Amino acid sequence: MGKLRFEITMSLDGFVAGPNPSHDEPLGIGGESLHEWAFRLKAWREPHGQSGGDTGPENDLVEESLANTGATIMGRRMFSGGAGPWEDDPNADAWWGDDPPFHHPVFILTHHPREPVTKEGGTTFTFVTEGIEAALEQARAAAGEKDVAVAGGANVGQQYLKAGLLDELLIHVAPLLLGDGTRLFENHLGPEQLELELTQAIDSPAAAHLRYRLAK
Amino acid sequence: MGKLRFEITMSLDGFVAGPNPSHDEPLGIGGESLHEWAFRLKAWREPHGQSGGDTGPENDLVEESLANTGATIMGRRMFSGGAGPWEDDPNADAWWGDDPPFHHPVFILTHHPREPVTKEGGTTFTFVTEGIEAALEQARAAAGEKDVAVAGGANVGQQYLKAGLLDELLIHVAPLLLGDGTRLFENHLGPEQLELELTQAIDSPAAAHLRYRLAK
Image 1: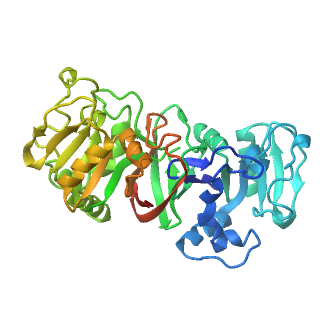
Image 2: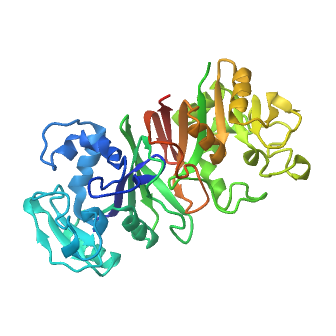
Image 3: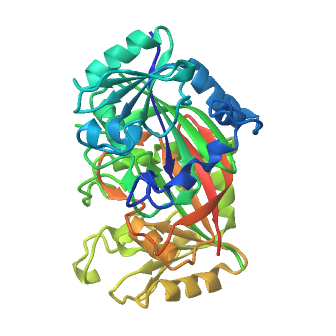
C-alpha cells in the first residue's frame, strides 16, 4: 500500500491562499503567485499540455510525486470554488476543462451527492459524501500500490492530519508573505504537539520544498 | 553598514512559542523543543560555555551569523518574560546569568526606562524606550560594519518587518507542529504582499534553515 501524502504550497507566512477568493481569483488576492515556482517546470507543464519547461532537482521532485501518485483527494472548494447544490454551482465542471492534469482518479469531498464524471486522459472525478475515511478507502483502492495525494484545500488537509491518517507532508514554501488569507495550519489542529521527521529538502530561488514523515 | 536581520526559529506550523508561556516555561508548552536543533551545535554550545558539539554546514551557518552580528535587538518579553515596571519583575536580570551568550551590545525595547547593565564577556544591556527606530539607530552605531540582529519575539520582528526596515529574514524551521502558541507571522502584517528572495537554504534532520532577502 502506498503512502498518504498531503502536498501543498504555502507562503513563508503560512497561507495557501490569499484573502477574498472568488471565481476569477480562486486562490484569493495574490494567491496565484504562490504557484509560480511550479508553472515554469517541465513536470508541471507537460500534464497541463504545455511544452518546454525547466528540468533539474526541483523538476525531479514534482515528476516523482506525479509518477508515484495513483489517486488524489480534494475538497469541494478546491474542485470548483463553489459550495451547496451542484446545480447552482456555475463552476461545477471544475477548473481544468476536458483533459485535467491529474490523469488518475480524483475523489472530491462534498456534502452534495453527484454521479461520477469521466474526463479525457485518465482523470475521473468521484464525489464522496461519507467523509474523509470513506474517500481515503476509495482512493487507496484506486491507487493500488501507488501513493494517495491529499491536494487541499487547507481544511481537508487539516482533517486528515487531525485524524492521524497522513504519512507524509510535502510543503512547497513559496518565497513571499501574503499577509492574510487561508492558513495551512490553523490553531488547535490536534490534541497534542506533533514531531515530524524532515526527510528531504530541496530549494531553488523559486521555492523551498520540505518533505516530512509523520510518526503513526 | 551591516544588514538588519530578523533571525528566529519557528515550527512548521508557524509558531515561535507554544501556548501559556510562564517563568518556568518562557517559550510556552513545548516551545523549548523548537530550539533542539541548535543545542547540539558547537557554535551554540561555545558562547553558552559548553564544550563539544556538532560541526558541519548547519554549524557554519550559526557560526557565521554570530561572527557577523555586532548588536542584537530584542523585546522586553524575550529579555525577562516580564512586563511592567522593572522593580516588579522577578526576572529583571534576564535568563542568561553573569556571562550571557551574546558577547556584544544588546538593545531591549521596553516602555520602562532603566539604566544600562554591563555583563561579563562583552555583553551590555541597553534599554530603549523610544521605539524600534531609536533602538535600530543605537544598535547600528554599536555594531559598526557588522549586522544587527533582531532576535524576537515575534511582535518585535513584525514591527521591523511592517516598517520596512529588515534586509534579511533567517528562519529556522523546526520539524514539529506546535498546534498553538505565538505566531511568527500574524495576519495583516503589512500594507501589501511582499516578495522575498530565497538566498540560502540548508537542512539537517533537525531543521531547515531558510534565508530570504527583502526588497527595500
